[in-house]
Image (cartoon, rainbow, N blue to C red; front, side, top):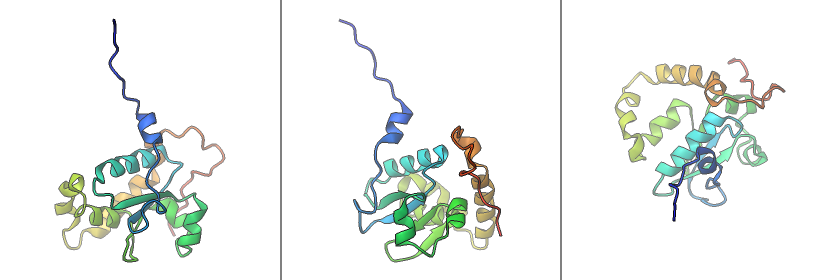
Amino acid sequence: MTTTAPTHDATVAESAPLPSPADRPTADVVIYDGECKFCTASVHRLAKWDRRGRLAFISLHDPEVARRWPELGHDDLMQYVYLCTSDGRKLRGAEAFKYLSTRMPALYWMAPALHVPGLMPLWQACYRAFAKRRYRFGRIESCEDGSCKIPPRR
């Protein structure tokens, strides 16, 4: 009798459904680019690290986002990940990671740098520079129509 070792396929793990705001109505909600492979892999990692079930996830392309958060424009959502907290705050980019760095043990290592007074503008600039190039990291092949193009910052 021969057995083969199970293989781990990242795409299978990433295709598992993420908890939605409907699944976790009192959770903080991460709004991410569901058409970006890098972003999708990142939120799946966040979901795995969220052992206390404090986060819910929704793609910025889901019509529910415009219904629930009409003040968040599509262009802004394409430039930043957003974290809508259960108490009504909307944190974007590095601010979202600063918030999560005190709530998720897997991100505690980020807290010292993100909490240095006066450095958030630098972290936001770094975040924007990375986010602008995120499709390079995700190797998007299905973006010929320009829907993945990040609008220029105003």
